[in-house]
Length: 159
Image (cartoon, rainbow, N blue to C red):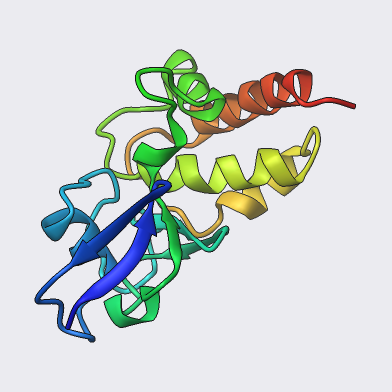
């Protein structure tokens, strides 16, 4: 089938897509967007999280056909050209990136949180990131990154 969708604000058409193929496969292998990672293929780890029509989803669980005519925003789409998004920059500065496999999903989840909740508490941060697993960092630096991003986003948004 032919799939028509918008990815990172750009209309895209992908040919030869099997309806049951995952959105993750289409993004990575057919559209060349390797940011979202393929780890568990069961929606358990969060490394493939993307926005679908503004809602974070595990792209490994979304059939490609379900994305027809919809908006997808990947971790690559958070940046503005070479300028990282506040959440991406905070992850770098806080040292929250180690092997990097979980990072894209954590960044998308954190991005959604800091744009939805002004000054989230640690329990709110933990809840928002609960669907994302990291085997390297011990999570403290990730929490630091979300706190930093939240402060910066809060300063940048009009009151």
